[in-house]
Image (cartoon, rainbow, N blue to C red; front, side, top):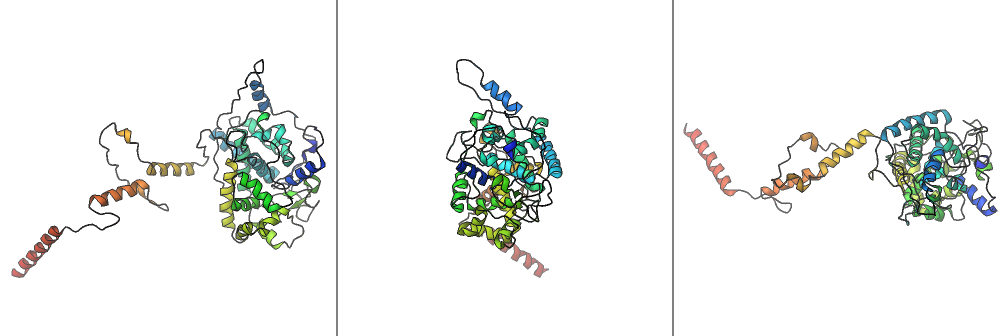
Length: 439
């Protein structure tokens, strides 16, 4: 995976210099999430929003006299275009090794979510707001201009995809292509349409706060995440490296980064910083290699008693880490998002088919579908009720229970014996034996 892209200082539009304290905090935040870099030459981004953003925002400004501006949201993404875009992202990953910065792009777009705010888009989250300059210029997002430049051609090629979906698609694909787990993603996120809708600065975590564990909880609890999810997501630092000239953290060069790929230099968290595995937890636990980076927030996961339980587990069990990380990543990618359709879009047909089949078995037909006629018994199809690795559906359980109770049984008592029938069977049996003896 490629290291951090060129610093955004030369790419973002000129703005007044922040205070020393704000600059230091911003630099610390840059190193808090995985990121990467690549040579960008003399290419410079436009200081204004993207062409798409300008068009939509321009329409919103229409009308004289300062009347109410109606903001129109983009429709849901097209599933076919999402699948094609995923393949294009894979090709970009192969040639640029930019996995870390694409992970960071998705995280920073969704990581502004505040669970205490119900209104969309004021609550922040995965809504594509990171493409606008006001949010892109936040200190925590330094360098992400380069990530946008990498995927903007894909957005231009597939206009039926929202930025919010594209950011999360790129992030999940980067994890999977680096050897990580399959992320159970869904799509259909709606974009905000104007820079005025961007969330305020200061919602993303810092790398070197005074009280690391408390800071992590303050930030991630606000998003609705728990200790297990905090530690699992921290494991994404197995990817990428940090550069002191851009974030204020790490060494200028180590034995693991001096030869690239991409622009040499920086300090990585793991020796194989292009591979997604549980090395991050192993290396922090051992702390034997001075060439590997350990931020204050990294050390906190083995120092805090609650965090340590999960960190120790993930250091020993990569499968457990992968399972928990996949769930946490998917949850993070959905934070604050407004979906159209509300249930989202699945790109994996096999998963979608399984969910559909389960719904058919589990959901009984509405009562008014019979038009007053007596309900007809559902024909039995063995394959439909075959549970394989799943339990019987609720419908099947109800059928079995109804038949059992119809014979006089119940969960509290066994079926009653039919004594008359039993006597008749005994008499018939004795008569049969008597006839055999007589013969």
